[in-house]
Length: 319
Ligand code: ATP
Image (cartoon, rainbow, N blue to C red; front, side):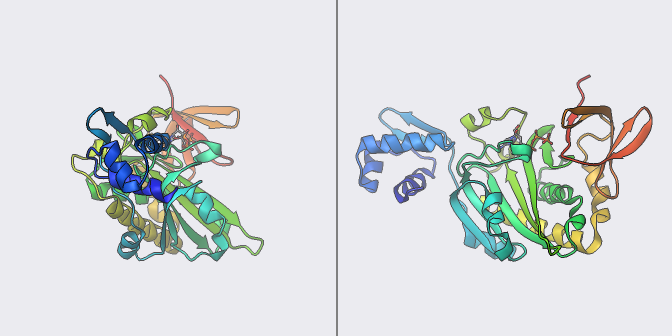
């Protein structure tokens, strides 16, 4: 991200109209050059309106992230970037050098990702894209159920904001009113020495621009649709990190069993007909929550059994 493009974003961040001429004067470039830069902003997910005689305006004001504010509120190390490929990849690349809790944020991800190579739509400055480093001395087996626990940290964050009915979809998604508001992606590096490096990624929708919303191929929502008041993204980031560190600490101290009841109370599919997909195999049954290890409990022909192995995907069954 060039300095001049960052400056243009800061000028437009107030959500007011700015004429091409005035923007060009501040940036020291022609109106034509401004118009080219505006096209780049649109390509990274910002909705920019142009009105003849008035100039350019963002669809809503932008509040940019401030690493110092987030770090001060959450007492972990925080780095904030304009653009990253993926916040998870950024921390995975240097995992062995990091301390527990080290977190990074990006305003924009060029290759934000979900599970199994799926894309996470990450328009500039609109949501939270963040990753946190953690490690488990007890090794990879101790990580079982971790993405479920992160969902609980997100649910607690949304509850603090006043969003009451957050639901969790096994194993890694957060829903409100049946629509996806956040995704969790935990990636693990297990070392030969038995140590386990974890990178915990979160994409949390705050204020979805029009164009970016059209790119998502399933029902979604964002915090601004759920709340009547505007939200400070830095406070949101601090709130999430505070809950995250608390659940991670409790997870290590008390184990996954500590969270089972809370997770089951937020289960999006509890007692619903579902389809579980693993590779090219599918099972149909009734979702019965999770067990003490975090495995999905599925009832098929009256028998409830835990589902284990591989990357499974759960969907509500069409009736
Ligand atoms: P599962 O893998 O459990 O079947 P999933 O299909 O939702 O669930 P994930 O890897 O959890 O897959 O998330 C990626 C998917 O989320 C994308 O394929 C897209 O459908 C959706 N998605 C992408 N970006 C966003 C976003 N910003 N907000 C909501 N949903 C999104």
